[in-house]
Image (cartoon, rainbow, N blue to C red; front, side, top):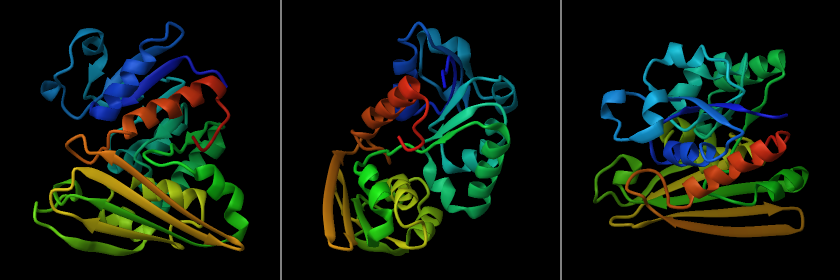
Length: 255
């Protein structure tokens, strides 16, 4: 499936990285960059002519592929509408933990034949989870971040959540997209365990994944430095890599 026209949702670190990557390719056209408030944007140059905060005006443009890098609320509200005419890559994949959103995405994509792409975000190893799904017994992911990265105080310390990934996505929707990708690839949102730990003055984000199955056990640790918010330094690179694979193949559903 060849994609030529692109819409981008989100003007943050990931959205900017996606625009910079896509705009380098002469065969691709970025039709809009949808942000929450144009007046707050600091971007200059070619992006300013396609920058908009008018959701209806942006989504009325029938592009081939939409790259969402905003927040789960956007997918809750607009994913099914987008999928009626465009394929969609949703970086805020914690939205899938809401069953109504997941059902709407599946129904809309089923009607239109469009694809919903689930990026791997700041983690790796999803191919192993997908392949090993029939023999997996437990999957646990522990994320350690600073309090402010979790929306709390700087001195927040210790375990702030321990439960199902579905509940983690509902309580910390902007912090656990990695958890959502792992749950989707493996045992699902209800059978995957999420642990979130606050560490004062933490300058790196750490994801520790423990996977136990029939005659197998994997332990994966991934760290990246915080870019000042909920995004780690590896995530924009990962996002660009996911989009590159989508554009080069067009047939991979887990990227």
